[in-house]
Amino acid sequence: MSTKASSPAMVPVDHPLCYTSNPRSSDWTGLRTKDGKPQKADSAALLQRMLDRQDIVNLLNDYAYVLDKVMVDHAASEEWANTMTEDAVVTFPFGVFKGRESMAQMCLDAETRFERMIHMSSNMTIVFESDTVAHARSALFAVCGIDPSDIGNNFAEGGYYYWTFRKEKTEGGDEAWKISYLFLDVLWEQGNSKGLNEELYPVAAEEKQQSRVEERELPVTQDLAV
Image (cartoon, rainbow, N blue to C red):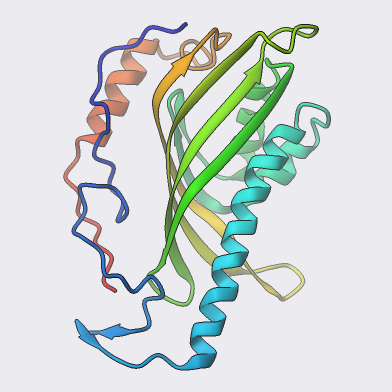
């Protein structure tokens, strides 16, 4: 089991769905309020929001499944990185990564140390800032096998994902939702992480953890106007 510098049980993340942000409206669509005043949403626009929400759920499911798929197909690391925008910023306990290329390499470096994995993302809250920007919070539960022959010998961790998504044009001319921001706040872990959260990258574990805590403690300035 890893040892880390102490940090709050739940920490302030600069994200509109973190507990430190202003209470959000019950209108997850972002269509029923304008300038703080209720308005009637167009039925076609509401339908599009529901379709977009399902697309984002599918994206998060793909993110988790393809990450697990890397165990048997290393080339899937690029498919996994393609769930993100080219300028995506992703923060994990062991580092901050920017862009698809660095994410694909990190995926191979970090995840192939395990024999098998299952990542689960649940308790999803998704809200829309506009037609092309959305935010989400979900709960992580991950179990990773650390022994090639004993499926009962595992490392596990859990916490919260904070997501931001952007709808972009694809090479084929269609539109697709991609992950533009991700912050993973790991709240607990159990078992041997095989160095995943300690020594994967050159900076010492204590320095990385302290840097992460300091980043979390920045004042929350982003607000979701819905």
